[in-house]
Image (cartoon, rainbow, N blue to C red):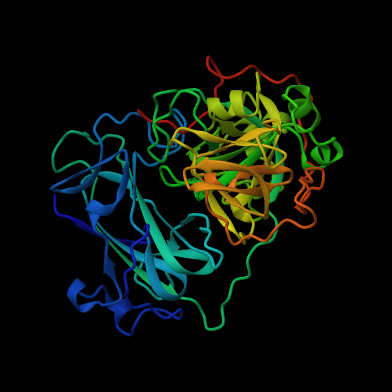
Length: 495
């Protein structure tokens, strides 16, 4: 089958490449008459297929294809709406100027249901914007698709999904959906377009369920481990790359006000009621999967991708369960049997938060805030966590965990117990949240944070300013049991 030309919007990772930027007003004169030959069109840059990070995809002589026998689509609920059977993410590119959109050009062949394209960029504070889906491109031929970005960025990245046709034979050469070429073209921001950094992180009270599913593969290609530490959210827009924490959540058993009013745990306390009951516990987790229930419900955003009739912070599954929204069904038509708006891997659920059943938790969507002093958690292993304490020393009880690769904003640093970790040794400790401290030796970055005010004494009872938790309805019913037999809303595993 001859390759087809599809021009669409895009994805990438971190390679400094210089290329020209199309003006915000549109492409050069004559571009609307059709694509120029690649050699004569300097506005586009070719992606190297071999450099792409692949989830559920294989690279052969014909290009990138969904791996045979990969199982359920990545991030798709069983029997639910279409989601990619494979996902390929290309390295990021420095564009040498402010960009607010990306055009993408795909070469494809075989029988496919589609090749969804998304893009994102790095904000001025070094944090990634969320993944944005492709739309139409003004001034371009109908086949050109443009991905608009929510902020002016100087680095862009593109990812492309492969959705095979339902009746396509996956093992038939020449008939399987294949991605054989990807080009991208940045579109310059308007003159003077400078995006202000966001304020405090958005927060909401949502219902969590436990993931389980050890040995399965998440939507970003991670293989679920025993006692793993990551989260799943019901939208692909906040899906981190494999092994990365670009999108990190803080999940706590108590809200900020409850934690502030509780007495701080004393040095030498051994945990139990002191850390779990009075102040609650918190975990910092990268988002590595899509679920529960929905796959396009970015309920933490003011402008939601779907379900814009619901208030910000209210997951559609919760509205369906408690108020009969959408006839009590999710976006795939399944009857919603619990109000979950987040899923937690087993280690975070059982060890980090010490939950024994599904529960209501408080979630801060940390990437929605401006980051002043970014740092990435470095555990002693990729499967590990760093203990979170209410003070700068191991004499303080453990009140939570921070997973390897989680991205945090360091509020301030102070002197404490000398500790040796993956990033050296020293007595500096970082405050990464209200009353939450970790050794600086277990974080990459954050060294430019200011010293904590006053004496080097922790003040866990003083919360950082934040966005109030939205007042959303909670079903007045007993929480269902930990999922695993029936009604499990987890929707993001394949294979």
